[in-house]
Image (cartoon, rainbow, N blue to C red):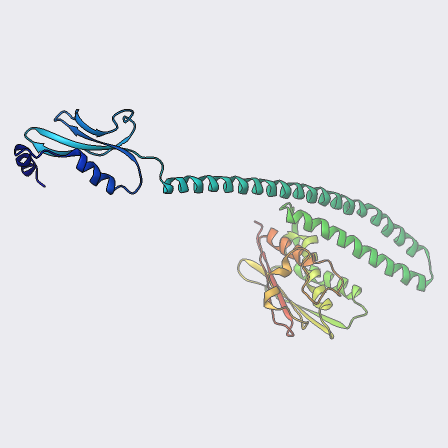
Length: 347
């Protein structure tokens, strides 16, 4: 209805009936709210009302709607709107969410505290174990020295062989202890290198001699192929690289079911010395080829072999500390080839 039409009706004695308007307004409300209808003048002051007029200042008010031009008049509704069920449900959901968040925060805090306590316990245990292992080095050195003195002092060949066998086993134990300590330090990124000029061919032969001695009762052959164009010496930690070669050659013998046939090749390119150790052993499934370089990992089905699962971890740490790389190519039943690189120049 236009404002001019409303003016005509008002002029004919048919002004806006607030009572009827109130009935229509109430019928269209979804809930039973208290409300008041107001007639406002041109200055938006109340000149007429229908419904409650006290304490309505805080009620929700509609926009004034024009109902006449002569004179200017407006109608406005004020409603006492209480929180609807939607708002109540929203508040309940919000409270439940906050409560759930607090529970989650508490649980996470508890778990973090438990993890921190466990880490401290493991760290203390690790320090204790490392200390114990480190303390074993001195007594073993004394035993080796004593055995060597006794062996040189007797002439009985049978007794000398027995002492030599004992000396070899104690030396292996001493090397294992040193390997454990180096691997533990490497795991903490504390592997220090004592670099000097070393000849890879020489280190490979020393590793071969050690493996031949340790596996004298197992049929095997080790062939070392030297690249004549390779540089004679590279900057490296002598002990660590000899250990790398020893681990790879020993594993090749250890994990071969029949007679082990191992080939060690040494070559170089423009920037790196490249060493490969190839065997005809049991091979390694692809799904295990990354895991074998992790500390204490043993491939399923090989637990009956002597070892602690730290040799290849040390190989990885030592090679990477030098700035080189290590990889394996293998298939079950077809043997394995381990290849590592070492920089030709000092980094």
